[in-house]
Length: 117
Image 1 (cartoon, rainbow, N blue to C red):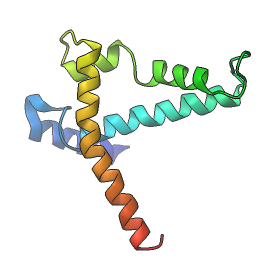
Image 2 (image 1 turned 180 degrees about the horizontal axis):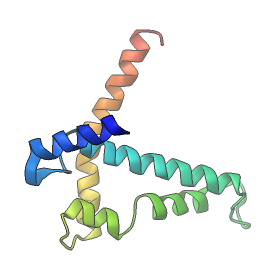
Image 3 (image 1 turned 60 degrees about the horizontal axis):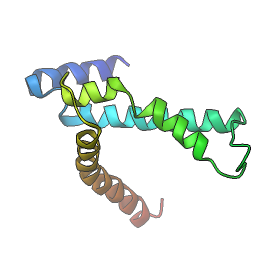
Image 4 (image 1 turned 90 degrees about the vertical axis):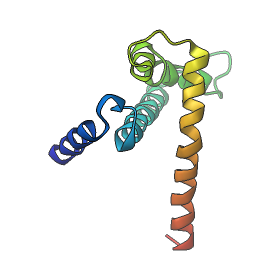
């Protein structure tokens, strides 16, 4: 945890007013959100939460994970640098992030595939 804090402090100095919306800090913020989404989804499934009308669907679990993991004022506030942001703008920022994120994930998968790992 101490090394992570040092990295964040270095990036904060490097990026100035752009921090935390740049560099590894941004990627780690999204990773944190994704991990929380997965945690909430798995916990909801493990707790047996389900739609009694459609017990084989996980829509209710995914919705709960989305609401608690991604949606919310604190994420909008973080992305918008404390300005009001419409949901459409929020989703556009996520889409923009996904372009680089997807390419990075694909590259990691390809690297491991080439190495037969």
